[in-house]
Length: 230
Image: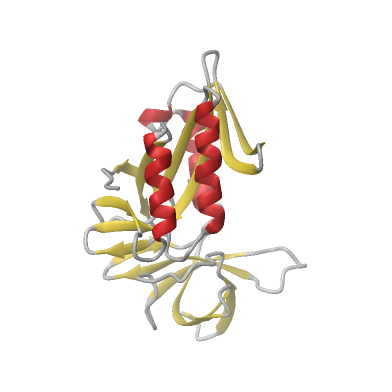
């Protein structure tokens, strides 16, 4: 996934009210950027850290920038929660994820039962529902999800299990927007219920695919699939 416009460099002053961040640009100007990440952003916040923003042309939007990434310990961490969905759509459509190759039709935002999944992929043999989650939380060598309690995430897992019960393929695709981790796992201490339901869903046949990506100011690209522990 390439960024459509050159990103703008600056330094984080503070994040506040969940969806806002004050940034000091290289020009010295201070701007307010929209933060798409509604979680705690634990392990990817650091005062005065380098950041990149994307400019927004929408005249109706109050904030004229979107916060895309932050540099933590020398590594870029992607914090825009919308980017994993775009990346996943492109990757599944072009067959770049080994375990999700061979689909001739890919649709975004498809309803099933009482949930709306990020992707639905089809071919002559099968239908596959895919839910995409953004992962930024790091603890040691582990990439963890979620970074805050998520009842919506739990509901998605339960509905994916129903997808599987009806004879279709069900996949949880975790997009890990940092390259300084080695293993994916549910964040049991933060949301033990999510961890429990993920394990149940997996035992029922819901697939788990943790994909690590490399985040740069020019693009976000797939690196490799990581192992996981439940």
